[in-house]
Length: 260
Image 1 (cartoon, rainbow, N blue to C red):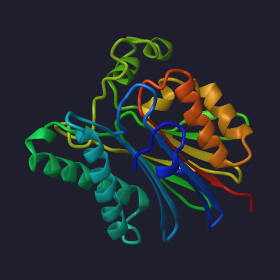
Image 2: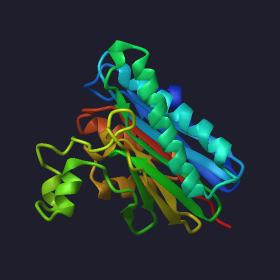
Image 3: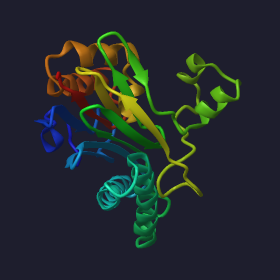
């Protein structure tokens, strides 16, 4: 589930199904020597499942954590969809993924402490249900605006909510990369879920912080809306992150509700 350079070929996917266009890209970036992100686009009975996981840990364990998390999340979600509310199924999937990462770490001392973020969206022909743990983000994008749907599980977000720093100060805070929750690496996790209305032509964007650390939201908006397809937009987002330094792995997954 990883890529390198600008070829994007290992995860370069674009697809249209059930009135939903999707695209996914993942790239190592310009500084890291391997990609610990994993991405997913998969069909479900009611739409399309999109996900990004940003792994962390020594001895290349981050890439194990992100892959294990997505596998477990998808399996649990498949068992629960249809029998549970979508948000409940997504939350349960995240909790099972947390357990799976912990168990995988316990099988190998080199993986001790490994973890991963998770942001996922189940997109159908009316909207999306989002779940997140960590600081990988979900955005809603239309012709005029970009709106962050998810709320970062991070130290700076806690400082913002406590009124100790402003959102603008958070962008340059020396602890901006410290997350407060991660699958497999936190004492307890509390996944957040969100329901997102999507009109025809509106897009859900999921991304790792390798994008948002390098590219301002205004530029992300322009790249998503000004390209003719989500495939072209995904290419442009990854290229923009790399042109601005590529300091981390960068992953993007997009889903767009097509016109009626």
